Image (cartoon, rainbow over all chains, first blue to last red; front, side, top):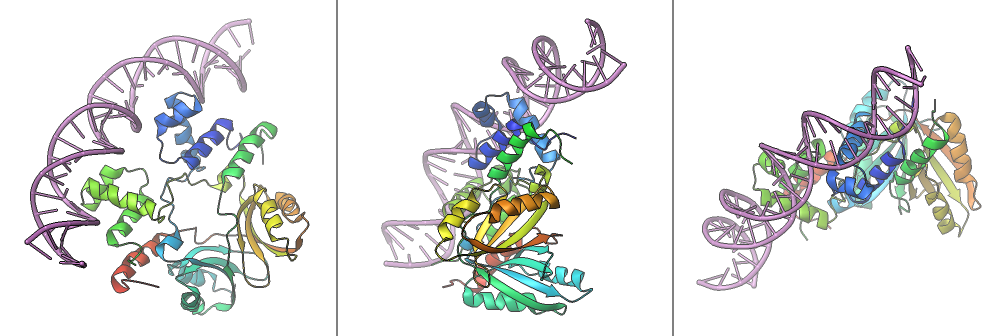
Length: 165
Length: 165
DNA sequence: TCTTCCACTGGGCAATCTGTACAGCCGCTC
DNA sequence: GAGCGGCTGTACAGATTGCCCAGTGGAAGA
């Protein structure tokens, strides 16, 4: 097995992240490689699942949901799948993970306001199988979700660790 | 103030999310509106910050980082900004929020493996100012990060709540 | 060492899309 | 009633895309 991505892949992803509007041709010019190469790399990256797509990045705050919170849920035994389905049906639940530790699930929720957050929480926890919930409101977001440093890291490691289990 | 998005905006975002590769012209065909309209809507959505861009969605797992964890950090008074800078410098820290509640910060981190997670955690917490850290490993991800239901909700509310404080 | 395979290059082609502009139409507000 | 903003339908030049091909160079395997 070979490394996930190489230096050119890394540069390509970085370039596309920083200037998403440019096309394949422009990429090839910036990266100083043939257009076919860029196309092939992109196809491979998508085929390997490294790049999932180029969907629009929607900002919940601009949609009228400026409040973000993280809720840790405790689930009663055996209710897991029902709870998942329930949470998946709540639009304000943006993300859900099952986790180790004192809680069982961690979900990210958004709301129109702190007051509105109460409504969302009520809806989230108003379901049999959820024993307890503790919510933490996100105040600031010093580091927005990012992957670029990781990409750079992975592209660098390529040289150091030709393969990785 | 008017509502964040209307029904057409919602349909446009949904369409682009589901099929990112299609262009403006194709959108106008699918939505049964003029191309200029789609173009104008897109420009406005981006200008208003509803859509941040169309960057590639990178999958950390495919990059060799299949392990995700959430770390809750407790910070000693007045060390906040230093800690932020420190965490921002760690590639494996994908996201960082300051939060209410027992902890002070919540960050999402990734690692090559459970064993490698130890290295990452050591690096994350190995900094003066971080008093205590508790980590929860993400096992499953029943609901991947999504915004579509929220977009649909917002586009619907447009009719019901013409304005919102 | 020789052969094969794979990736990259550089070129070309037709079809398509983009950016931009224009005039007309409609509903709303002043 | 005029003005304004948004949508439509159209037009055109220029750029881009998808696709194909032959040639080159390096790496792995025989």
